[in-house]
Amino acid sequence: MNRHEIAAALTDITTEKDPTLRMLKLASLCSAVCRKRMVEVVVVGGSAIELLTDGAYVSGDLDLCLTNPATLTLRSRQQLMGELGAQGGPRSWQVGGLFVDLLGPLEVLARTPLRSFEGPYGIVRVVQPEELLVERILVSVYPQPYSPARDCARKLVAVSLGGALELDWAEVRRLALSPEYRTLAECRRLVKEVARELKTKSPLDSDQRRD
Image 1: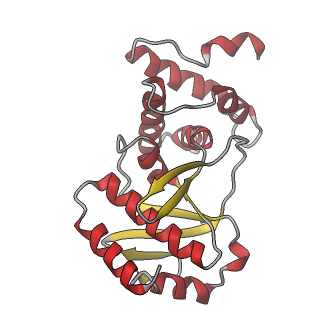
Image 2 (image 1 turned 180 degrees about the vertical axis):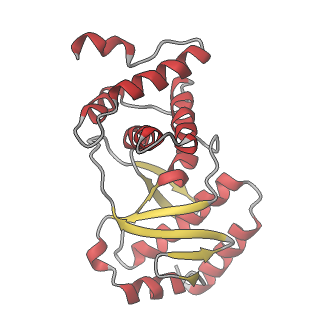
Image 3 (image 1 turned 45 degrees about the vertical axis):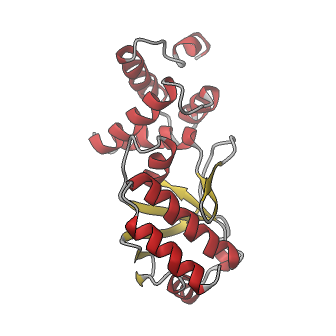
């Protein structure tokens, strides 16, 4: 993208009224500008949940991780974000009226593929929802109860059980059993709770006899 195209995109983003569409547009623009420099980013955290749930959860800022962090020095971060007219740094900037956090390397255990969204300025890659779910459940209970993380996990589960988001529940179970998470009991409890509210069956109920 050239500077005129970027300027037009930023105007489009700042005037967008729908918060989730605005997030998608910003993620698409950031991804396109990074990709031009041979840098690949993945949307993570609350912003990933916002995109995956189509706005059932609203984050308010854009969290990005790098798949090839060694290619991006501190100075090149500033230069890259400068193309977007950003203010701040070196890890958090304001772009188009929203905050963009460019974090460290992408660290995931999930074996399922990254999700992709078609944005107005190019493809947006999003971290696996299976990883997000197990991660949020861990944060919701350790080191102490944390209700915002639990709320995120509940929204992911509700959207999935409602049929709008496909989750690989065998992968959720594998991740929850892994030594890095060890949250299968907590996962089962939360999923069963949401399933009961939606009057459906928990997809984690059928595997209890295998534990």
